[in-house]
Image 1 (cartoon, rainbow over the protein chains, first blue to last red):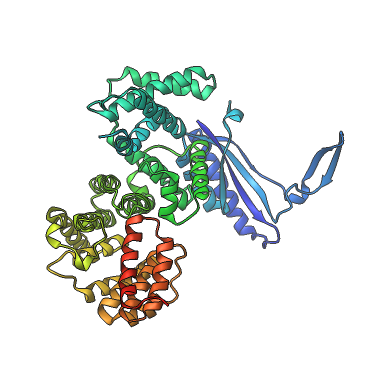
Image 2 (spheres, each protein chain N blue to C red; image 1 turned 180 degrees about the vertical axis):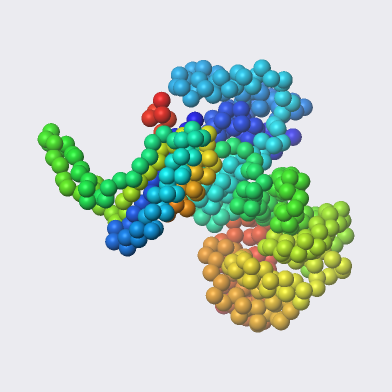
Length: 117
Length: 399
């Protein structure tokens, strides 16, 4: 079995979805989670707080420093993700299609072999 | 058959079968290359079934190689191989393996350019420089595309199987593009002998298998018809000196009547389905070229208009201009060439040169021939262009 990260992204400054829209996203996402758990594809998943809640930790000259805000200086940030396990990319892409219908574009990335040992 | 011809004929099939046995394309390629190296050392004369010899040797080589390694995947692959060895010995490469490999190489998760490059490399056995010339791009770019695509197939676990029925509409078009380019590379080979018949035969063979697998897909039938009708004219394409003969001057009695009949039959089947697509229209154009004693150019032009509407590419626009010249004259065709952007493609200046010569602008024609000769990578085509250029010079010496 191969593990994949399915990540959902938000673009900074994009208009906030309405309450009704969020409700649909939550409902659809819950349905997908149930299906993943029922079929055994589920490993882990969840939604994230906004990027301004992030803290970056670095080691500089042997000292630990912290900075407020996300690591990547981009306008796109991960809003949530799933980790799934399946036989091959086609299965992962089929899950990603369901996730994309609920949450917008989904990036599918395989884990490397060592982290699945 | 010498080893080079056997390599050309068997490479793709052997890699496809080894990829199934090993579950890894890079290992499969290495194993097949190892086996051919062994063949070079051991064969005095090739065995009766060279493909089977290569597959068996490659498999044994892969087992040896994996035994020396100790990673988890290697042990896994070795277990797979040993498992397969318990099964009845195969007589050679398995037919389905090539289809499997084609659909893997043409997976939509791969970049379009990478799909074609990879299929030509793995199934056509083309080398990187040949693919670069077929694409009109740098060799380093092709090499990088192939490496990246193979890495993604392995890392992302792109499956190795023929897609299910409902997946075919998305999976099929890139496969057809690949077969079309494979045939083109064989028909107008970019280096060496102009017509490399084994590549053409390979493209036709794969197209036939696709047509058998997907008889309800009219574009598959259209592609097969196009390849057959083009292949049918091959015997008349070069004269006794090995020089190119233009379509209008070809000896039609040399054309292959069986292939033409088969191609025409496929075009009629496509027409009955009435779901036209780019390959079917190109097949229809070639059916007109091969129907009766001469080409009905107004009908060809009408088909090119239809094709340009469906597939507005510069190469289609260039081919349409040739038909325009036959119907409306070279001056109108020269105007039709304006704005066509095909950097590095010799056929654009070559066509312009022919048209300029026909309207009597010899100096301009000469310059266009020089451009075309500089761009053409095939010696037969360069020789043809030089002959045409010399025909101009004979009438008026350059000052």
